[in-house]
Image (cartoon, rainbow, N blue to C red; front, top):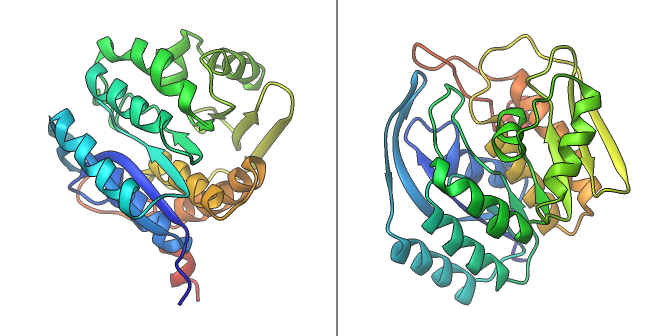
Length: 264
């Protein structure tokens, strides 16, 4: 049998199974790539929020990364929750020495508003992590954290993208899901510009959306797609996953990573 493309996620664990490492691996399986993981933190998390988070030692993160990359190899890497400056800088150093496209999801807060990135780590994200990115995928809250720009409409998204690109990623994908109206995202490298629109689903169960999108983009890049093609395919997958999101517990449920399988 042919070996499928290999994608590595460097992120935190979500014990509720909707976001983080769990969402990443489910997305990768659904999209036909082999998912691998470097765990950066363990969270106590459910549909109501994050009850606790414990960062892993830098040595453990570095050892996991080297174990996977040196033996198995990767065709793409996706980063998620990196809660401290030390961890951000360690992962950035590892990424800089890896010959594969990188998707950086600069996770700052959870779906419920729980902080997942120390304020002291923001400068390291800007100066160390984002320069390693093939694609950076901030949502509007993360744009505000990183750039100070408050996006209130589509016109502001161009300004936000320029500011994010100023930190060094090759492409910026500004996710406008928090705006009213259709779910619109902007992908740009400062020259080419791709607007992606989808009807907004009337479904509150959207936990894991950002992790899922970033992992879907990384999966497309691992398959050899161009950045615009990978992002377009990822947008279609995530839109379907949001439409099929389901209730779990008493709060916000997850998107449905297996929606295409259930439609068969």
